Length: 451
Ligand SMILES: Cc1ncc(COP(=O)(O)O)c(C=O)c1O
Image (cartoon, rainbow, N blue to C red; front, top):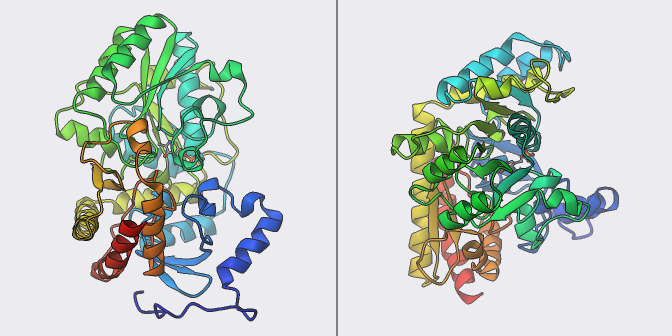
């Protein structure tokens, strides 16, 4: 698609107002804040959010007519690239047979089998529509299984927008500088213990202070919603053994990392490094597993998952759960996510990160790039020490990111509109896409330096 629309050919509306600006104004009149998810409004980076009308491979076309290399990938799902032909064909086939039955269909078990082949501790699965539902359901199962009330989460980890998980939640809340959400009762908030990530002592102290009351620790398999902050060596293993020793469960949230950090998510990355002697009890998936349509899943040990209705007493259900069109998109995406796709993702991510590091270093902009499998993000921090937690992530310069983001956008590259997010490549990021990024970088590095 590169070159399909010339780089400087942004269409301008009759009144001289760019099309995206007009669309944003129209949306603000009928949609809260003009957006259907807060980070989309560009609050952290300034300027007018782009309204996209088309995506193909690594490229997005906005309503102004201009094309951009995409480094957001729909916040993860577009693993194979936008509008991948096999995914689109699968969706079309499924849609032709009916958009949904509100009843079981054969492909649900097919998708569950594919997931379990890659992630064996997902012995049983339940499909839902969003990552939020998946983590909410995992927590309900954990409380039912242990008959305990408290949940431990880590500052800067995002698990969706259910009441109990919004404290110090990273992602959009970090972007907006919110400690939590209004509308959550003090009683609900008090059932969540928020700890600093990668802090072995704080975790042990929490188990001692709340002995017999912690149902589960929920953790992103690698934190990617405050920028990318992987678990410190040994942290996942210690977390799991501590939790189990104290009778609590571990919920590994792979909504973002699942099938993206690597073929078996970040669990697979750690397994290959010999870093996860014990599997988590419950695991959540989203994003890639629905290939861009609303589908997510909670999985885990059979004995725990069988607590869900109709097998057990924990209620969960959904009109759209396991929707056949969404399942078709997920199946086609996972089938396409083969060794060659991961090899391409790995090399594209390395190329992009390498170019960014080169230009920022050349422009003397202090920064640090952190990784979780094929995921990475760039922290504009002054010292070279690893970012290990939310306090560390919050030390990054939002002003530098803002300048860098806008210069990249001007150069035809769409980055996450917040410094608290991972960068996402796709298996379709080819030489033309990488060349566009390389061309945009010198001006962006300069903008970051003078910010
Ligand atoms: C790790 C993690 N968990 C849960 C969620 C919530 O998923 P959804 O936005 O589909 O509700 C997200 C979303 O970004 C996420 O990154």
